[in-house]
Image 1 (tube, rainbow, N blue to C red):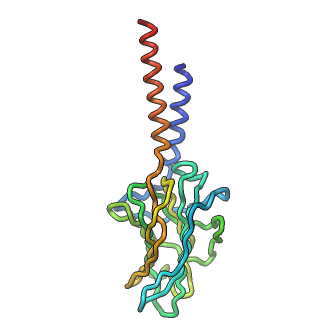
Image 2 (image 1 turned 90 degrees about the vertical axis):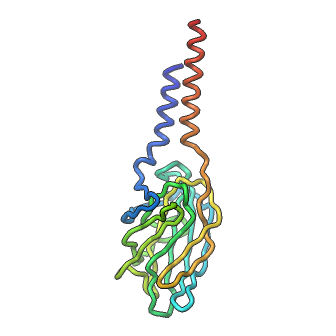
Image 3 (image 1 turned 45 degrees about the vertical axis):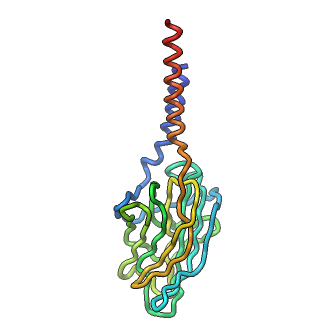
Amino acid sequence: MTKKLSLFLTLGLAVATPALFANTLSPGGTVPPDALTVDPASTLVASSSGTLNAPGSFTATYTENIYSDPSNSYCAGCLDWVIEVSNSSSSSDSIERITASSFKGFSTDVGTNAAGAPGLSAPGSGNSPDDVTRSLNGAVIGFNFNGANAIAPGSNSMLLEIETNAQGVIPGTLSAIDSLTGSATAYGATTPEPVTMGLLGGGLALLGLARLRSKKNKA
């Protein structure tokens, strides 16, 4: 019994381990963009597209796909956000920041996807962000395009990816920003099922039960 319980706990810890290797962006933090991918076997669970219009500044179009990714670093089947924004404006204004929300309470690994994703192709000439920031409360992820990396009219961002430990979606907001902001209703993250903690908690409970039975048998 003891050997079986030890194996169960080991498997539970193995499930938790991948999150330790993710390049996690903590609330209030700033990181360079990571190189991320979406497993080709991923399932599309939600999608949105539309216009990000900032009157007097720019007009942009966007596509946002959310995938259940079996190779997600946090847990198999957890969700990846993949976003592409194109500056379709005829003005001279460039987009300098793209934000997505809400991710409060969730772990996030952030960066760009050069390999593409199911239903989306990777733009070879897309602009890459200089860095990625997260608001102090953890809700807003911001991709920053500075100077020559700003998304000029007629150009687009690379595929921007947010890998999370979320397992569901709720209404959220996607925005493109220059001096003004264009926003649209998109998707945010919702509370995940505590898969890892459930495994560990269950294993510890069984271990305690085994010890209790062992004491009774000795008595």
